[in-house]
Image (cartoon, rainbow, N blue to C red; front, side):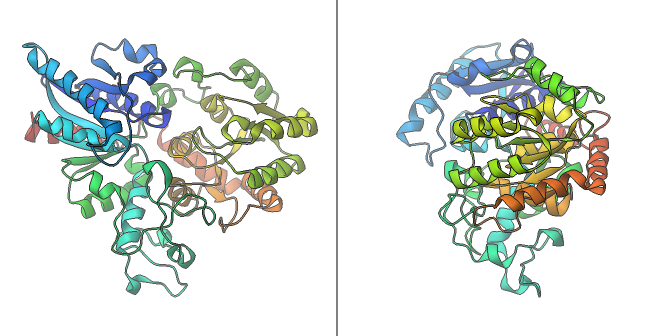
Amino acid sequence: MSASAEIFVVSGPGPVHLHPCTELCLRLTRNGHRTTLVIPSRVSSAIPPSFASNPLVTVAPLAASFSHRKLISDPLNQSAVQDLSAHLEKRTAGSEVPRVLCAVADLKVWWTKEVFWKFDAPVISFFTFGSRAAAMGLGWSRAQVSDTQHSGARLIRGLPEEMAVPYSDLKREPSGPPRGGPPGPSRRPGGGGGGPPKPGIEPTWVQKVKGSIGLMFNTCADLEHPFLDYMGNQMEMPVWGVGPLLPEQFWNTSGSLISDREIRHVHKSSCTEDKVIQWLDGKPRRSVLYVAFGCEVGLDKEDLAELEAALGESNRYFIWLIGSTRYGADSSDRIKSKVDDRSVIIKGWAPQLLILSHPSTGGFLSHCGWNSTVEAIGLGVPLLAWPIIGDQHYNAKLVVSHLKVGYRVAEYMSQVVKKDEIVKGIERLMRDEEMHERAASIKARFGHGFPSRSSAFDAFRDFIKRDFE
């Protein structure tokens, strides 16, 4: 790759977008590319020092905030557009500055592609989630009545049979997920998750990627080969699975613990890594359940009460990241008074990679956000899936139906999940030896580092070099 060309990577706001985009930059540099990471300045403090010191990486923090609003002409996007345009104009004015070879734009800030087009830079659309979510959303919109099975489930032509859409999901009205995420069934009526698109109504991302020269996904063929192929066939453009985009330490630990504080920006927490390690070291192998629902969504009050009761009734050791729920403060005090001897309750931020990489951890009760899902799969930890919005439902189906390394906390997610269902799910997950063996076998696929079948970076390099360098 010529040193006179550079790839721009534009990240959406928030850690679920920033982390994959920083790792993408690092992977591109290892493949011979110079990169510039474009971010809103308010998240620049979350950039790891090791990343910022890489000589092949430039960080371009824009003063304006990024919005996922629909149009480049939206007033909330105008200041960001002006900042990005000014940055590119300044670059092109310099005689020794590498030209922009192409841009990889996070789907969350898809509107930035129009800025790059003004500078004759082609754009690749980047999905920070998995390809199955996009494939299922697209497939649902194109499903035909003739594809319905005897059970009432509807097949999606070109995808595995276990991905058939249940009739109960097909009946739901689309309402559109919050924050511009991919379409997904809501957890309960009015819950904000959105139903599957009706036949003939394409997911909103289809319009957002128009004009792109290709699609990148934060996944790999080892996990989602049929879904990557489906996306390439349906969208009729190159598709690259370049992930999972996790820190290098994740792939090179050889079974040792992963310290979050060494590789990621550590936020305020009620519990130190040392305390977590000390507590886990005293527990039997695979005896601890980790409970967390991410940093952007949480359980509502009714579900939280049921979870609290279930953890109190269960005899399992557990670590609960209470900071990921909206009503967590009261539950934290109540549950701690009941089960203090067999739990760690964490408020704020939790060292998730450390917890999942510890041999005492035997299960993960999760919302199935994509980053959490691939971290658990890569470390061989089975999941008890409790999806809430958007692509989480698709990720849960990947875990349960395709990879078979987890269970759903309840078969039907439209009502409040009851305490007895949660307790039953926990026991089922923790006791299932065959499932733990399957999880371990998938982990072994990544035992030699970054996914061995990830020739996607080579294919991307060859594509760019052939057609655009």
